Image 1 (spheres, rainbow, N blue to C red):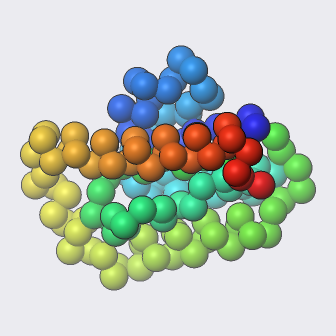
Image 2: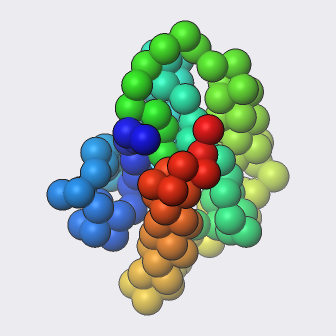
Length: 133
């Protein structure tokens, strides 16, 4: 299965950029969600959940999301998932985590990069074994 990874995680870019189609943006978690939404509106389909893992939205600054490389008709399920993720992440419900992000040191940032890296690695493995539809 051909896919695109949209990410703001430099570890994902560095580890997978030469092997897969990785669209890296130096931006916020929210901006990654918006970038994915824009691709979905152009006919790409979500392959990984935009809020995967147990890390709360806005607790981590990093997010990597897989979408289909192929474009087709707009997928309603993908639209609903990304819009719900955007609403949750930007609702203010997790504002205390967003404020805390400004104080994260490099070691903690590296840990969050690693968590996101492992989550997207699992998605890649699922895509390669045909477990994704």
